[in-house]
Image (tube, rainbow, N blue to C red; front, side, top):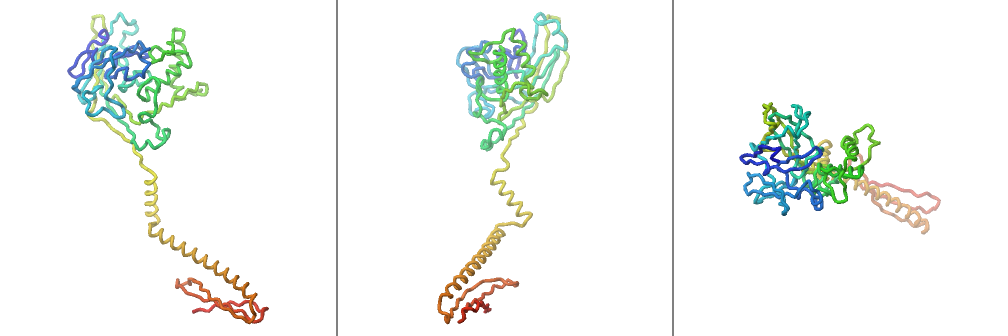
Length: 415
């Protein structure tokens, strides 16, 4: 590591071996700052068969301003005190990974021996790449990259944005809310779920399916072979067509293999963005080396936090609709009660009329069987409402005459 990274510093602490951890990506070796140990990234059974990523022991400092120290060691790993969803554990004796703060800067000088590089790579157009990612993710080509030229001094200011979804969204279907809460999705290779880890694992599985092997830089298990020279074309084809396979963005996407990933983001996301970048050309030294310097610091001491809440529950929807009805139609509980009473009154009048009609029919049938000289009177009361809305009571008298041939006469007498 000292052959490539000549000067490394965070605040007042120096030493590249102390603050950087080495990893292998599809583009070669990477040196990661503030990444958690591999035992905290991979599931059990991955690192033992993955010689590139050695077990890493993390020596954490009690002082939160002192960065952790990395060692290649076979001792038990130190668990991280940070998770994307919960953040840092409260009342923890030490802070690992190192938290960000305004004014804290990472300064690194990269040194490359000219004899180790082909002549075509020694021009000023040669690039170095940098990835910004979470501490529990690996550097991968799936991430957005920032590049630097050799023989330059580069200053970057970055900002972080935190997006959260309220816990009440757990009641919604996963496909409806479009994100995973912690513990809702498990991965085969990685201990913690992130969208990048999911996409990385999906690409590993797809490479294994198409080529029968995986790249050396990819995590693997014992039944997975490492791709050999004869498999390079197969893998390179996957690398170039992967965006079309993943997003189905190609015009001939129906010819592409269908390989679902279902890699939705976490409901708690942290996004890093380079907000300012300054580059100065440096003088090339005649010591047989080519240099490039990078300084990175946070732009602000605070980050932007956005939280999604459930705006309309069922009770909120009913309350809002009731309010709108009351606003535009003059609707209220009293109006509802009055409407209910009117409906009941109408129904009562209808039932009384039907009952009266039945009684008239019964009285007619009974009187035809009795003595012709018998006169019976049936008093019935009917409530009606005239045009002046005055309730009047009418008495109906039924008289059966002596002669059976005479029709029944109904006389209305108003009281």
